[in-house]
Image 1: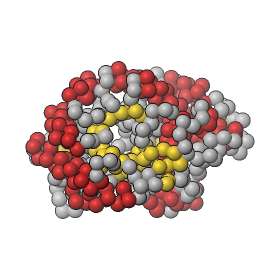
Image 2: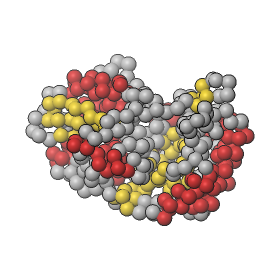
Image 3: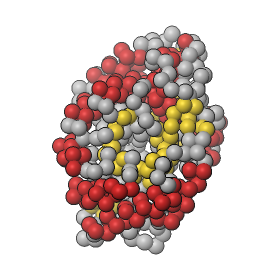
Image 4: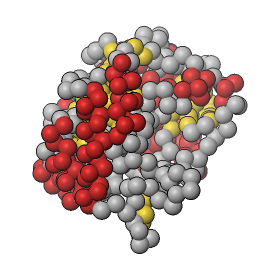
Length: 389
């Protein structure tokens, strides 16, 4: 069996790569936007074409060999765009391998460690009251873990020039977060896990003040409190924080995760199934984390293809305490594009038993959802200086 071509696909906010072979088998993987966090990820299509140059004519079952070649033939390697392409292609190759063997992917990774995967869901709303109401709804649906953004809206509403967070004082930031955390904790009671994410927007002093204010509410983790680049700063924050710190969605190589773990800079790591190099790479990252007693909670804001890849990985590793799951956000396009997703049942995703990843794209539906660019608004101080996107 030989690879004949790589097909780049996109619809709505998502993009995929399909690997075709000369025996009629094909596999699909999902592509993260890489460095295109705000705007159109133009480089993703080019990265897929770059790796197609190597892959066409090769045996698709030699997954590890191809992973190493794709990674190492880039002399300046490890950027988020090529790594996201490698990740999507890796998922597609595992999909082919499972279909060829007639087995689900997790069975080829050592077999299942669990029958279902616990999920945390994103809460919607920006006020304490809105978040509390959605939290009660989600718990009634069976979720045992919820996560939300406690800094309110990240984009100005119509007629507004900035959000409540933009230009907020040190004390107001702490108060904003604590009010929302307190409301959600009261809504769900003491036995539901509660997580928050501030999307890398705080300074270390702000993040530490928030962590101390929230300690009494029993947070499961505080995700991405500060910018992702300085691991020494992360280690110092993790050392001082009274609540567990999680991070990793903006890291993309096993070496970065090794450094993060060596510095004891996180209690939970959040590798993205695409950005960090796919199933093959995350299996290795999870093994390093296991040796450090650190949980792996894969980052997953994407469609049903990436969700399926995460579930196969989660089923095959020991140290996955919970999986990110965005629930019914974008429900209609997601269901149309991946009409038979991994089954969700009362707060859990059920480990599938179909060959490969067990999901497929509906090519007809792709035509009805034109590609969109994700527009993440900048966060700007009152003096006009940029805080971050």
